[in-house]
Image (cartoon, rainbow, N blue to C red):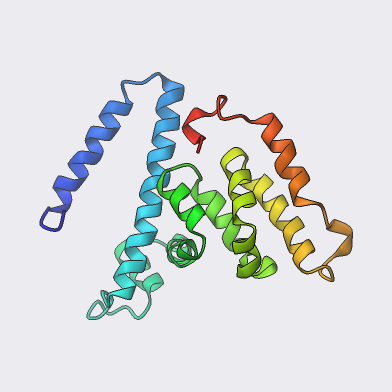
Length: 186
């Protein structure tokens, strides 16, 4: 795509939107949600690449966040995009699921909020369980599991709120099956 103009690329997006319009309303919403997640994952990756390849030079911006604020006209969302782009390479399962539209930006942002309380090594060691949960549940439920994981990783944090992470993942598996949400199935 190196030589394509932005307008030509966006024409392809119009094709996707047009094709989605032919679906029944519920499926249309689901397909568009997956497409949005896929685009957000690609945006985070592209911004990370822009920063890593020195693309900020000459832009007048010293950080990827300031570049996103200026060129994407974002406020707080600019930093979330940057943080997603920096987090995802460290959690390849979540990166792949986000790129496939199987988890949403809210799931990734929930991980971001819990990176410090849990610690990156803990998140990496439990990524499989967390991803299984994220594929089947809401960002709120993922946050509850991350809260429990933070308690397990750092018992002195708050002993009263410690809850076993596997119990939450197991209860969610019984409630949501791949057949009930086929677009989110792995």
